[in-house]
Every structure is written in structure tokens, then in C-alpha cells.
Amino acid sequence: MIQEAKKILKKVFGYDEFRSLQAGIIQNVLSKKDTLVVMPTGSGKSLCYQIPALLFNGLTVVVSPLISLMKDQVGQMRELAIPTVVLNSSLSYEEYIHNVDRVRRNDAKLLYVAPETLLKPRILDMLSSIPVDCITIDEAHCISEWGHDFRPEYRELAEVRKRFPQAVCIALTATATPRVRQDIKGSLQIPFDQTGEFIDSFDRPNLYIHIVPKQDPTNQVMRFLNKFKDQSGIIYCFTRRQVDELSRVLAEQGFSVRPYHAGMSEEERRQNQELFIRDDVQIIVATIAFGMGINKSNVRFVVHYDLPKNIESYYQEIGRAGRDGLKAYCLLLLGYGDINKVKYFINQKEDENEKRVANIHLNALLRFAETDECRRVPLLDYFGEKYAREKCNMCDNCLRQDKELIDISVSAQKFLACVKKTREIFGANHIIDVLRGSKSQKVGKFNHQHLSTYGIGKDLSRKQWFLLSRQFIQKGLLVQDQEYGSLKLTPKGYEVLSGKETVRGILRAEEVREPAVSKSKRGKEISQEYDRELFEILRRQRKELADRYNLPPYVIFSDRSLIDMAARLPRTGESFLEIHGVGAAKLEKYGSIFLHLIDRYCQEQQIDE
Ligand code: ADP
Ligand code: ZN
Image (tube, rainbow, N blue to C red; front, side):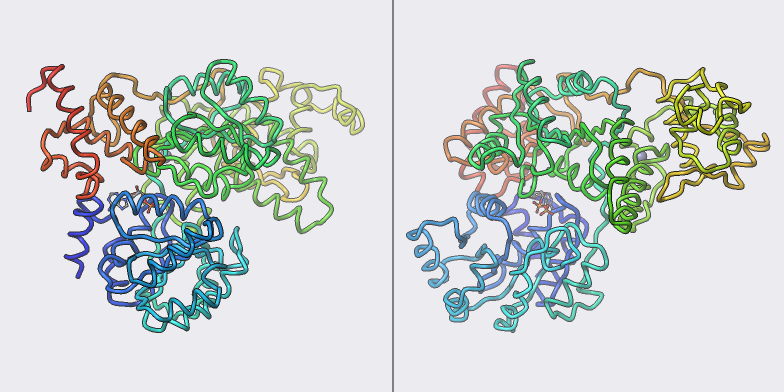
């Protein structure tokens, strides 16, 4: 069976190998064992039910919560010539009847359906009259009240499941804590045993993660964007006002950009999203309202202009980049004013429990943002996973030269002494005031201007002290009270204070480091060299076809496929089939157009076969 599956992988989808867990999952589904799949975005979950669907005689029903996701999937299936039908509330009456009829006539391998549509008695009756081999529950975390996106209709899917005892059930999601996993299994009433559960690492190795101090954010962003000519990306801001402001400034500077936030009309939002998906607009500046249901595979960067809400949303937001597996860049501007703003909001909260949870979230986020070890360590740790390697070489910390870590023992001693002298009941802001000799009211009120540590830290700026204080916490010299933010020395802190131990850390200068993005004519991504000029030619052709067929460009060919063409320069149908993501349907539909372009380019450049 798995041999058959592998043939389909190549012939229909144009891929040579299964990715990590895919083969096992497909094997499991094909032997009609219920399966739970937890894999990160972009890891290829869809294939896990699409390939079995092609091998089963009967229908595969796919329950999906979002119309935009369904539309995207169906578009992709049609491009691969897989008979696919969709049923949801966005269809006209004629379309709806036509599609129901196709299902009834067994003229479809896959049926994408919204949960509320599936629950309609007429639809259920109709499905009972035909063979159904598989029920797929996409975005399965929607079943759980503990997930971030609970949908009540998902709860009722258990009943649906009972009506089709001969069908295997596969539930898929990209986000599921153990609690949510349990819920999915429980509410679908499926006896998942260990062998039916496939949980992949949360790591996304192709995302380059970097965090820089926020200093001159607009210019920082523009310098960053200049490295991504014609490439797609998202910039997240905290407020609608910031979104409007930033997108206006960027547009004035000639960037191809549109805003997106909940304050805009639905029509305007839909339009801007569509422009982005179709590569008509390069950049979206958005609040977190943007992104759900975006399947665009060639998002090359995600910028966080402001501090994200928590690690989970950060992870989800950067997860929208690089779904095609090619390198993508995630930049976070870490403003210490932003951190204080969030702290201020947290302190305004009335509910003590809410306050506590918010503080825990913020501290986890800061631990990640301020670490000087590999960023994947705290990031994955948050999701309960231990990063298997020490260095990823795909984050700023891993690429930082070791020499940037300097001896900061003296600064640490000053700070720790000041914490102790003020009796360990104040937070970093007040300590810094004392160190820098501030004349603030609070200093006067406690008579701290008479302390021996008053004014001994004028050599460093407030910001530098603040970043140092975060490192002292990070390195376990100080502990911070979760609720009040007051700092206390730890045994390790005393060791440093008494000079028995030294500390190394980062003392940030004021200038900003940015990642190098290769700009040479010969691009190199995922260790594949390709001809950028030809890539551009192919990209323009893809765009033209996409507009003609009313499809997003990445549905025709992914960036990865175009890069592969620009690297291997196929000249025959046979070699075109070797290209990543090219199967029989794509060859027939687009082969001659692209082969012609490649051929002409090679002749012009006098490149031999
Ligand atoms: P997910 O649903 O997990 O977010 P998708 O199913 O959308 O991810 O897959 C992401 C991309 O990876 C798609 O373009 C898909 O065609 C591609 N892909 C999936 N499986 C493979 C594979 N075995 N080899 C190469 N590419 C693959
Ligand atoms: Zn790293």
C-alpha cells in the first residue's frame, strides 16, 4: 500500500520523498486506524489525508472551519486534477446543488465541508447513501474549549462519526497542548492508542529568528524591507493606529503595502488580503487580526514592530512565514518602552488571577526575547519540548560572535549591591533610578540619595541598565516577584556580589545588527544555487497565469518549484517532471509554457543542456 502512496506522491504531487511522519501516518490511515496528527504549520499535514483519499474507493470528507482555507485547498486540488468538491454557505444555490449532485454521483474523491453544513440532516442522509471511507477533521483543536479557537459545532462531530462506522477518522492540528490533545481524543470518542498518535517537533528549522532592540523602528523596518525586494511579508503592530501610520509612511516611501485591521470595512480587508495573496501587494501591515486562514506559502518575512502578546501568538505569527520550506526571516523589535507599557496594563488589571496569568505570559516571552542562548531552546521549551541540539545556527544568538559576550561582573556588582541596600523590595526601574542618581520623588521619599550606591551607575544609559537587569534575572543572579516585580538576590547573586564568581553577558551598544540576506545574482537558499534572473522571468510568467486563471500564484507553482527550475534548467518534459512539486497534471497544464521560457533563456545566455 505504501508503495502505491509513494507513486502518487511523485506522480500527482511531484515530490520525491515523504517528510518525517507522513509515511507512517498514511500507512495508519490506509489500514483504517484512527489517527491524530499534531504537526507544525507547513509541515505537510494535508498530504496525510489527500493521498489516502486517492487510494480509497469511497469518499473522503474533510471538515474545515474556515471558508478561505477550504477555497485555497480546493484550488490546489483542482490544479492537481484531483476531483474535489466543496460545500459551505458561501456557494450560490446553483453551485450548491451542482456540488451535492457530484458527490451523489461518486464524482469526487474529496469533499471539503464546513461543520455546520455537514451537520445538516439532508447532507448527512445524502452521505449515508454513498460509500465514505475517511472522515478528516482539519484544525481539530477547534473541538477543545482549551484550544485558542473553540468552535461549538465541532463538538457535534462525534455524532457524525458514529453514522459512518466503516470510515476511518483522522484529526489534524498544528497547535495542541497535551490537554487539547486529550480533549480531541475524548470528544471524537475515538480510541486512539499510542500508535495512532503522531506528534512532530514544533521546530520550524527554516525560520531565521532575530530580535533587535527597538530604537528607530520606522527606519529599522525600512532598512530591513530593502533587503526583500518583491518578496512577500507581514508586519505586525499592536494597535490599529500604528498599522495605519506605518503603512502610510511605507507607502509614501514607495513600498508596495496595504493595511489590515479589525477597524476597516470587511470589503476593504478582503480586498487587501486578496491583493497580498495574489502577489499584487508585497507587504501587509496588520494587527493580529490578520493571518487566520492564510495559506500563502511564499511569505518570506514576518516583522513584529511591537511586542507580541505572548509566546503562543508569536509562534503562530512567525509560523505564517516560510511554509514552502525555504528560508524565511522573523524580526522582532524589542522596545523596552513596550515592555513597560505591557507591565502597566497588567498592573491595571483588577482580577488577581488574570494579573498572575498575564505576568507569567509576559515573563515567558521576555525569557525568550532576552536570552543569549539559542532562541529555539526557550521557544520549544514553552511547548513542552526539549530542543535536541545546542545550537540551531538559524537565530541571532547562534550567529553572534562569542566575543560579543563581555565580562559584566562590575556592573552586576553595582546593581546587586543597590538591590541589597534598598532591602530587596524594589523593581528594576527604581534600582536604575538610584544607580543613575535620579532626583525622582520616589528616591527622595525613601531617602535613597544617601545610599553609597546612589549615582554610581551614571556610566550607562537607562536602557543599557534595563537590558543588563534582564540578563541578571535570566542568569539567575536575581529573582523577580511575579506579582510586584521586586528583585531579590539569589545565592548565585551573592557569589557574584562578593567577587567569587564572574558574569559574562551582552552590553548593547546603540547600533543595530541586522541579518545578511544574500543579494548576489546567484541566490542560495536551502543550499540550492539558482539563477535569479531566470527565477524572475518564471515568476512573472506564474503571475500572469495566476491572474488569467484567477488563482493565487503559489497554487500554480511554489517558490520552491520555480527555484528548482532556475537551478536545474530542465529542457524536456521528462526532466520537468523531476522538478520539486511537478506531477502529471502540472506538466500537462504548464509544462510547455515554462519549458519554452527556460529554453529561450538558456539559448540567450548560451547555456548548454
Ligand atoms: P500544513 O497543512 O501542515 O500547514 P501543507 O499541507 O499546506 O502544510 O504543506 C505545506 C507545503 O509542503 C505544501 O506546499 C505541500 O505541497 C508541501 N509538501 C507536503 N509534503 C511534502 C513532501 N513530502 N515533499 C515536499 N513538499 C511537501
Ligand atoms: Zn539558535
